[in-house]
Figure 1 (cartoon, helix red, strand yellow):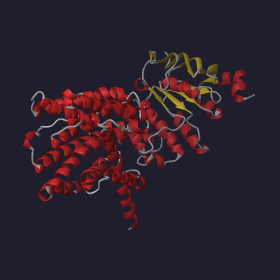
Figure 2 (tube, chains in turn blue, orange):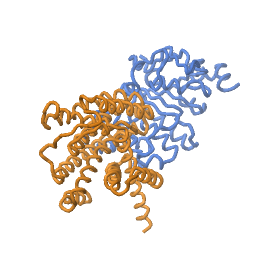
Figure 3 (cartoon, rainbow over the protein chains, first blue to last red):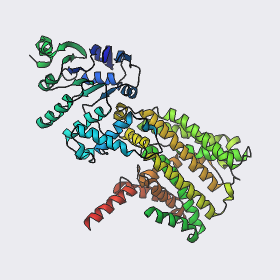
Figure 4 (cartoon, rainbow over the protein chains, first blue to last red):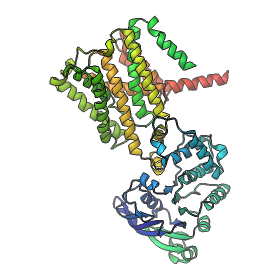
Length: 243
Length: 303
């Protein structure tokens, strides 16, 4: 059984194909890396998986359930979580409130309009922040914390959802060397029962973390395999490594 | 403590204030409910509406027509008007929430213009430009003070229930859809449904203000459904401070004082309203309530 299976996924913008017949299969617990040059369609592929963008053709199958026609929030309730390349947090709120909104998304409590916002949610949110080493900043506003901390909040929000499949869109983008090391540790500590699919530009870092790699180019899968296979493939060298 | 002092002041007001001022306060209360219901959408949901007078007007007309044409008492007419208007909000929400931003604004405006035009043109039902007269208040609240207390109690209950709503988990989710709708969806929240439920809830409170409006005036005219009425409500929210609980109340007081009090002395009160609004936006772009709070904090930190 595959954790995530994409079948002949296609998406065009104004006649320009962004994703062309992409099929791939990610096993449960796998660490899959998606690489490719700018404009290869990596983030578009994530958006098709989450349902943020409607696909033109093809199917998205999550743990053998076809979720292609489900709205993004329904896919989340089936165990799909994601982070964004461009940090997408709630800037007016505290770190703990950001996490609490994430916890609320999967709780029946979210429809309760007549009781006070549950303090228990903040307790749970602080526990999630502790997992990413940010508990001491729980009451700070998002605008008051460093960029690297925001990246960690992004990941913490996704982890708070207890996902079965986690999509990480360039989780190391824009980070300093020290921050990268912290976030890498954080990703490495994600429990094995969570399947991780990650887009990453930094080849050295990404190759460390991935088990299998998919190379996208102009919206097509051109190479797929283990680290050694992908690095050795001349097509990878041609389109991505530039030699 | 502050709230208890304010409550004492409000309860004591009819004992010291003249009839004109007591009536003016009642009108401020009614308009405060109307503005607070717009604030649910604008301030907490990020949805600017120019059609909220629809709910005020339709509830007022429904109650008036059920009394006049069918001879029904307030006990039946009031719940029927609230129910009917809320059902209309359910339907209008389905249409208006097909868009957000400017699209939503234009759809709410278009829907309200349809109702406004109907009230003007369907003379057989609404008596058109003459409006419906000969209406009564419930519980024989015909003197200024007793209606004041009725409006005060209704306003306190309405504002309390709206405050509960925005302070609830659902309210937190609504604010989330205002700030990051895409992220909310990625967190498992049904953004459209959250907005629709809030739209209907805001419509219900618009209807409550409409009932109080028709009880106060004992008369209803198509102008209650007009764009001007919706815009004044929106203006009150922005002037007072959207996304705050006190903002719409203060904004409602500003608009009603200018409209009903200053207009007795200045013929061009609309110009003054515009000027006041410009000054507020220039000096306190976040609205009077958050603006005064900001200035106070700055003053307190200096002393």
